[in-house]
Image (tube, rainbow, N blue to C red; front, side):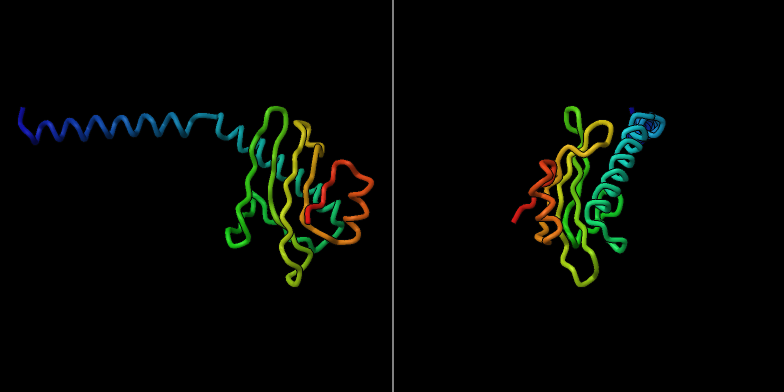
Length: 135
């Protein structure tokens, strides 16, 4: 077989294989379903952190609105729950406060760890077993 013919056959078969695998990846609904679950979990985590901090001007960095300059954020499923990490600040003058949140399958709060030493949160952490304030 001529080298040109062999190359042409190789390129054609490789192109067909890439096209087939791309089609399978694009039409696979599992990825879209997982993304929809992640978006719902992140939106629930935003509501929880906003309600806890109680500030209307709260700025949140999470997997839906990442900012690599602030830090890495993630959302991932655990056995029966979800873990979401992120950062928040009350204003541009405030520093970024990291948080790690665990949500149950129904998006209820299981555990929240914050790095924020505000008096309001310290007081609440004393009576709320779901909230931990780290130094």
